[in-house]
Length: 640
Image (cartoon, rainbow, N blue to C red):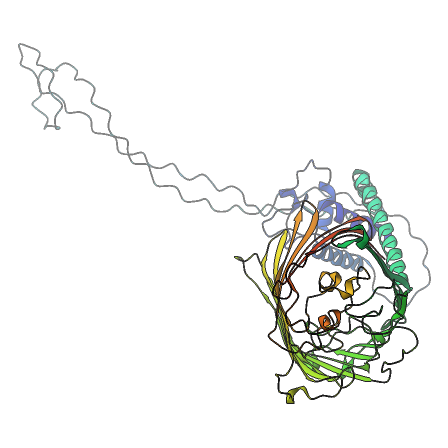
């Protein structure tokens, strides 16, 4: 019986779909088709039925629903053949094999009625009237042929005249009305049901079908085997990726720069090396860790003789410090968000009030997104404001000095607005800021463009001086960036910053991380090259306006930047880096114009080679006849 079911299913899959109402397959399956007997056998067994239009559609693919219906009917047939379950009796004697029943003659074609009788021929139209007979001629002469006229009354019988011309053919009579459609013929008598096919007969049918489609079945089997191999291979790859994701990995970079600066003389050559090496990896499904060291060769800072721009290392010596050491994890529930504990970098808004890019801080940070389903994002950082880079605290710094800042933003897909509050910064610093971001869509300006802006006030200095109670205005800072135009291969962005003379937040973009390119650079009135090449240009008591153009020549990217500088009309210069570089109040911003050009390309996986050129012109109102400053540098960066 099991073989019978399997063979029947093969017939279903390879020969016919399942249909919605019963039909005789002989109507649409030719009698000489090799599958005709098999189809008729399945129809007679009630396993397949016909489509509503009476067609079989044997070359159509079977749907899963049709297969399910056929399988259900097959099971019904099997159950009907099976005797009702009862108590198991004694095994009976094997009966004699019965004679096979005779195969019944196929029944006459049914359903479709006989063609109706041809309608009666319509009555012929009326015969046209015969032409009028001509008038009889006189007795002496034969009269002329009379004109065809109306039929006259018969004249007196005279001598028989000549035979008149044949009258014109009468008009064709109107066709007779169409005969009524003959009655539908009685359906032919259903032929006597043939004997049910035996297992041997079904087995033979299955064999024919399997032989017919053996190539297709083998190809399908090969495809299934190949698919299984692909699935197993994919599973192995996913397992490897999951294992690698949990394994620690090294990261970092080596950044080497070499060139000449100032008057491009050989005596003003320079080289600078910065390297960062770290390791990171998963501690669990929800937690990961990160540890990194950073090294740079010794260079002095702007206006000082120290390697570390703001204290830490011995002048002129190499510097090595712990750059990052933190654990990150996620939480759910009411305080769902991301948490970071340890030495880490923090940046909010454009960084005018909260940004420790210059040096990581020890502390704990909570970043809670969509707080209580209100679209509010809250970020809080609490830690220390230790000013030392090295492993041991440096004399003169404040390793126990606390630091606390909070940020709250309302976010939507195309805009964001919020602010920062510096509760306790370096020393006794305090302040607040407001920032925004928006994405503006448009077609006439080259597509979507973005705008960033931040305004900040410093209300208390590091020495605990209330800056809101002084004779001058409360120190403030502004920074804004906007995409002016964007294309497929170029973009133009405008830039503006203005920093008051008394604004000097220790951990902010006003005091970024950068390196000098030579030993003379800190005591020159020019702006250190990396101060604007690798950071937004924001300087105490200076107003900056400019633009940056990014574009491609072929496959090589280029960047051109322009900045114009002018004083901020603030007479307070003591916080300005020029105050130390020039040994006093400069009264005017020494540098008037800055221009840079940069290009880089990837020469190998993770290896970029770049070339940078810079130019600075001095303000004649500050000091005339100062030679312009120039710089050309090549760099190689290897990231991993």
